[in-house]
Length: 153
Image (cartoon, rainbow, N blue to C red):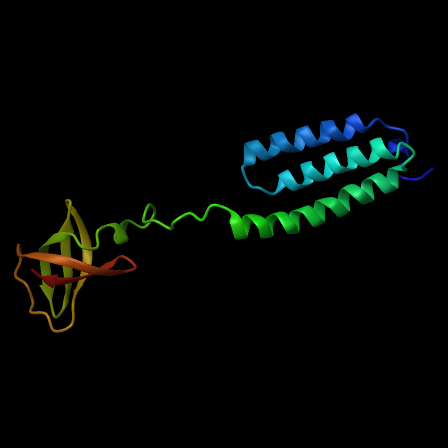
């Protein structure tokens, strides 16, 4: 008795139930990975409906093969035609302040600190810029990690 003999003679509805379960997992995880196995389960159910004498090993092989093929094809399709989200500055706080004005807290030899919205930021002067005085306003022109590059207004 083989390992997949228990699948011999099962109803295609079991594969449909697996497809629904996998689709539910996909809805919870929102990964666009499990959906391809759900589709493979539906294809297996259709194949079993068309060929009711299909053995358990053949059902599992069809499901596995379709899962792999659909996953590769689906990832390619999603990559090509899926919604391309713009990479924003949501989690890059320093990039959000480029172009804004800041108040000089201290500066010495081209490096210092500026205040933006009450928060201190390590800062460097843009090349060739004159050293600003404490309290002077500067413009943030770029960011390198958490260090902002500034120039006097």
